[in-house]
Length: 215
Image 1 (cartoon, rainbow, N blue to C red):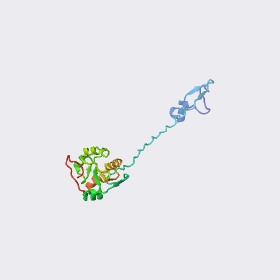
Image 2: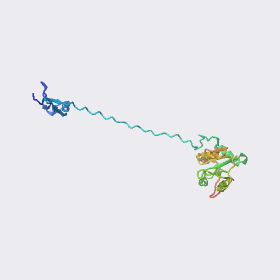
Image 3: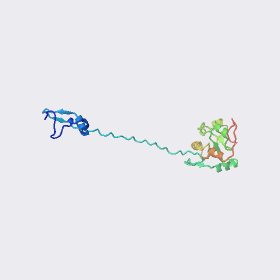
Image 4: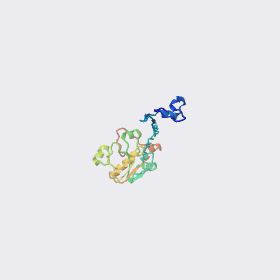
């Protein structure tokens, strides 16, 4: 027996077999390092353990955060009504216009669109124009300043202000501003101009430069 090789009785050394005849497990054994003991016998190191299979870490799926649906008025919806604000329908406004906006009713129709919009489409007959986008503080300025800017007196605080715009969004905002300024009776026409025009409501045309006050 060679002092540098360990022979198993009756079995030929694996290294003496042709490479094609060596089992796969024996090939792995031969490829491992070995060291020679001081007594001359060969001691084979145990094969290094196979690396653990890599675990794929799944990425957390980031779901889009849902946003609550808009509750602005549009197309005649009366959802999320401003406290203390009465909702008017097309029929309600039409009856008021047909009566000629009787002063006894103390209802003032307020178009809060910009002057350019009104000149392009016209307005509900008898409505005054207080643009909520470009003149948001109109209800809070002194009386004299209001008349100087708009060319007509500010509606009295004991009247009912009925607001409309193009689709109802600005009308709701204007009603809230009027309430904050001390107007106790405010109303909104959520359908606003889009519904008014679609239903064939009467239209008062405005010329460029014309004061959009009460008739």
